[in-house]
Image (cartoon, one colour):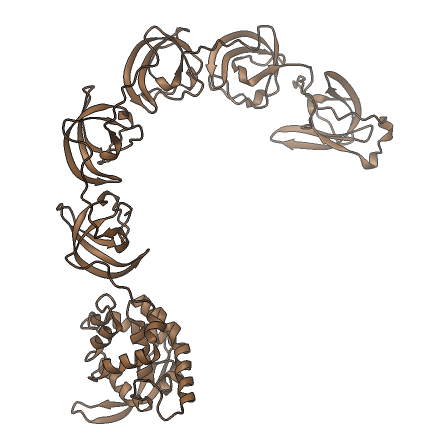
Length: 595
């Protein structure tokens, strides 16, 4: 391929000026400039794409295309967008042209050959980029000397192609002249970056480092010091080079460090704490350097037994600490999670003191749920030093109501300011279930009891969610009583019916025209009441009915007729047009009686 490319170049080079100006020979200055500009505009986009994709020098590729195609004036480039004389076919497309060849004895002869026909110059540039990157069938690194990672300038890349891509000993000089005369380096290559660090240099990983260029996390290597073993051209984030660094501490080398994460200004860290020193775990501590969770050790006090150089997060040292309370020592405490400013915590409450569970309490220190104990009052039987969340003590409490003791109450969930709750409702009082009710205190679902009215038969002190009492209620409709209703789900009952009442008007009902009837629904803003739903009859369209409605505690009956039947999830409701022409929608069956 290389010799054929060079021969095709020689057969077309007669139209190229050898001068450093790179102008087309035998043309006036204006025509030459026009030819160069047309070539540049046509080829530059494809060159930029191919050179970036294959990481080769675009300025060199541009100059190659100019020389090989006679600045785009060769018939092969004009008719087939083939700027490098590559033989064969492209997606089945080819063009036959006469070309010069040499026989085995070196004699020149002419023959017809098929050359690739490309749809645009971009595909021709891509083919050339592929050739430079992948080499020949017998040596895939044949052109590796021209790769950007191996040639840090276009000059070195041009020389690397001489004797390989083309046999012309002056090939590099011609490429460089074309590049410099036409400023292809600025047009195509853009800025040329230089590595900040070199092989053999000592560098340190910055504390902002997060990932290598291959995606491996390196936050645990922050502050490490090592020696650069290799520098590679690599664009990554704000870096243009990638470094292979062997660490001085003997740990596994890093092969893909971005330039932005290194510095040659070495900081020699010193441990904040020393062997024998007393330290305390900060309340922000979460994990040891080996990943063990240490939230339960917050506030612990212990003695440093060993200090090890270890980069972890924002720490540069790791500590082995023996705890003063005799519990299992911690071997991997990060420096950032310790302090030598010891705080000796004191328990807020003492044995024998009465305390109450706060309404924000959720879990004991052993993980048991205590939402059902909110508001409970009990007596402290034992106080234990225990760090948990924002607490530093744990309490064993005997409850006043005789229920099972709690052994692991966190200090943050208790208060000495006892609130004595009083029941809102009393035995014999009529109550109604709110429309927000979902569950009884025993977990039974009560959505189907919303709106029910009944009589309180028993009141029990019970803390549940936002309630502090539990009610046994017998329902007025004779259905099964409910034994575990939370106070938060009840209100005092104020009437007998459970249907809405349309807003009253100062106008007489006869003043309202049926042709311009107003409309409301059973969900309008009227007072709630209830009525028995047992054995409810059904009604038909246009059937005359009486509607029982209540407003301000007064029940009124209104004449009307059924205009629509609504069936929704096995429940039937009706749209009724009253005698005054107004319409009420979605009335339940129990608000109606036949006339």
